[in-house]
Image (cartoon, rainbow, N blue to C red; front, side, top):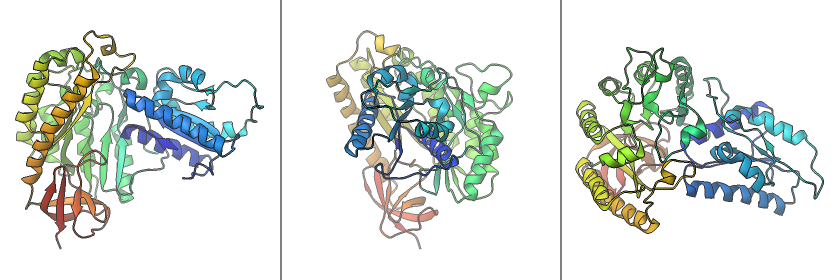
Length: 454
């Protein structure tokens, strides 16, 4: 299997592999040995779509070079979900397209393909298209998974889909409306993972802060703050996870500023297993840009929220992302964003150049910005953040931190999510997957240098 894209797609890949093992099939790392190849695609932005198409074509070409006509090729993931009809026409080399509702049926689908006779050479062939239009599937605690992460860290998908109408995004159309797993389902999965030795639980969904609200008796609005008086929420879940015995981090990813509340801030502060880390993509801060992006929040709310989070949660590190070059973004609006980044000093920050996503409302907006301007704004914003990050990291020199080693000489702190944030480079080996105390001795801009404390 080739799996592309985000952590949510990775969980889908793990479920597919669990289904394959459940059908008595074996998994191999060698494509030459495989009877079935699966490409789990991403279509978040144009570059992701290009990478997915390249992976599909490379998989097909490789089986031709190996003279494996009987080797089956399945395309899964977001690109298959969104473009299966078009891809079936353009890529007749593919044997089957499966969507997001079929991830837990991958083993059964692979078995059916293997049981089919090969089409005669030169015969017309139409790929099997199993994609359903509006996904409704969500995993459960006992859904078989073959984890692809290191043994000490895991992603737990607490919900699927999204209800937000962001004008630059097509994820709601692709992954469906927000649907939360029951609290007990998530708790049972996390309890089992901790019992297996997992030391880091990364909670993911398209909008983690909306968790549970779709199950309330009274409908929650698009700016509804977390409020456990109305039903189960992310706070309910965090309190239940905090009660699980063991030493582990709970990391919150993909939160939305619209739903943060004082209750959520207070809950995180009270739960010492919740990492002092918040991933909260903001996308922009200028009022007009937030309105054009249809972000369902305001600049005043965001500024006030960040102040409340930092005042209420000691030692918190905030990660965010911004989009530059969105249609109509003026020089003044971009400078407004830079000023906000300078004043706020985010511990972790990423920048995306706007991608004109087919099917999104923003793709049809006037005043599309030239790629050269987008690239220039990207470089300027990242140069600013590099300076800020270097200053923040330098201030940590001399401190003692609790870290989780991913490799004997490479670890992460609470402020570092897997794959996307900085690393802590150790002077001496430390036990992989076990919390370790280190003293910071230096920096390399985004990374830290540290000595393990005996």
